[in-house]
Length: 129
Image 1 (cartoon, rainbow, N blue to C red):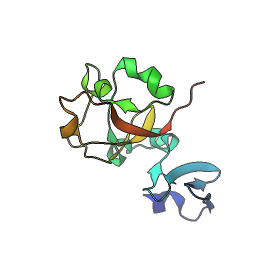
Image 2 (cartoon, rainbow, N blue to C red):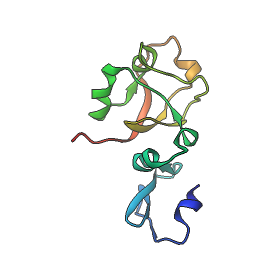
Image 3 (cartoon, rainbow, N blue to C red):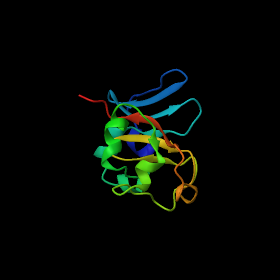
């Protein structure tokens, strides 16, 4: 998909630890240190096939204000009513939703029934206006 979006256009990369793929002055992909390239939230929101690019998890209403403030997503926010957790998500899987992109810290099977704190480490989030 990266090749399709950036063919024959100007592409810029920034220096380590953050690399950006920018096409026509619009950032499309990024990676941190030597991690995988991930789409920006802007690209995911514009992409028609976004549900096939990354796994989607949903937090309950009480977690939204904390995610917008920059907090990592905690297990109770996914397992309480209103939260949605896909059974196929494994550890270190990139996940996205309308608010943020992050990496899971344990698999969905490990999270079921636990009240541990850390689950998704945020990489990019929507800024509050």
